[in-house]
Image 1: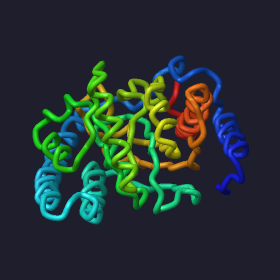
Image 2: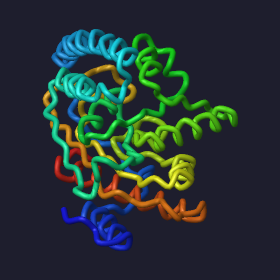
Image 3: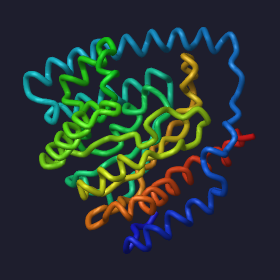
Image 4: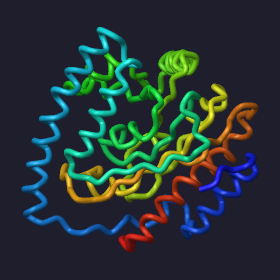
Length: 284
């Protein structure tokens, strides 16, 4: 994939990608992906994989929390990459990443990723060398082990419907960007129920415009087959691909530009998902 010469070219590339994938109806109108039915073996293998995953997660998160206190999260990137790659490998997935060459390793970005399951941060994190601070609902901080891990790492909490919480979130985001860190955000706000991209939330795009930080559309394919909302089964043996597409600049934009920005990001991400389902022949 060649690097776009300008924002106009980036928009053209996004449109071409969407058209090539057959992007026609809005994501909300797309039928759910049709997947292979679960079998008794699915339940047996899933139980084994849950045990394997937890056996990796618990000691690795414990070790990282200790190291966060000793040397700080940004200096533990090598360990975090081992942890995240190992967590995906524990689900017996084949993982690969395609990263656009315009993504500079020393520049902060807002990585906007499609939201599929609880392994999303693990699938995307090792794709680029950036330190990526997470943004999570404050209710997730009550989860056993994972909540303590997020607090030790400095994950930014999001409070629903709280002006004070939103102000604190913006301040924390600005501090992370000022430190040269990137942010990992799920612009849908919730996990997909169909395998397609859900409705994007305009608030995170307004924040991107205020921060003036480029958005990198990140689309993960294959993970909906592995684990999805509404089911606790882990289904092994699938290929998971992380696409980090060309950065979209937000500097100089205003609130009036938010709808166009949302459309541009949506076209790239849904285009990737449409292409995946068309190639895999698993859509009704």
